[in-house]
Image 1 (tube, rainbow, N blue to C red):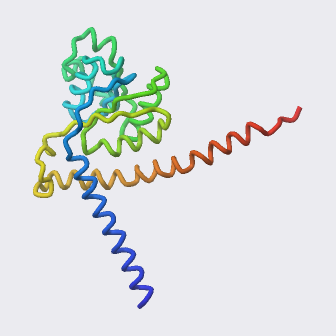
Image 2: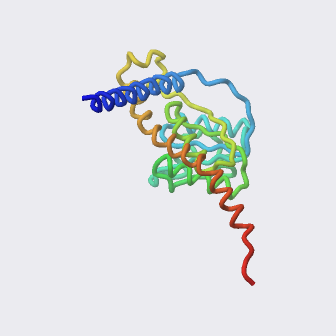
Image 3: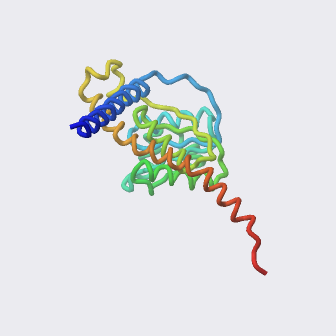
Length: 213
C-alpha cells in the first residue's frame, strides 16, 4: 500500500505540473505581443495561414530583413498564388522572396530555415508564425540553429482573439493540442543544450590529440 500511495502521489504531482504548465502556456500565447521595430538579416514565415504570409511580407516591405523565406509551402501552390497572398508587388516578390517546399512539419521548417540561413550567412532572423505555434517553432529552430538569434513575431489567429480562452472550447482544444506538441520539442531543446558543452569539450579534446606521422 505504501508503494502504491507513493506512485499515485507522484503521478498526481506530475499531472498537476502538466496542468499548471498548460495554464502558463495558454496565458503566454494569448498575451498581446509587444510592439517591436527590430532589424534582422532575414525573415522566415512558417506556413499555416494566409495572415502569417501577409504579415511577413509587410515586414519585408518595411525593410526589417533583406530576404523572406516562406517555409513549408504546399507543392500544389505556385509563385503566382503566393504573390497574391503576400500582397507584395511582383518586383519585390521575385527579387527577395524564397520558397521552401521541403518542410512537412515544424521540425522540417527548422531544417529548411537552417539551410537557407547558412547559405546566406545570416545570424539574426525574425520568425513569423501563429502565436500558439511560436513556442514550439522557437524550440525547434533554436535546436537546429543554436548560433542564430531568433526574434519572434507572433500573429494571432481569429480563433484566439477572444481573451477568455477557457470559455471557448475551440480555442481550448487548439491550445491543448499545441501544448502537447510543444512539450517534446522543449525536451529535445533542453537535451540538445545540455549536450552542447560535452560535445564542444569532446571536439576540443579530439583536436588536440596528435596524429601519427
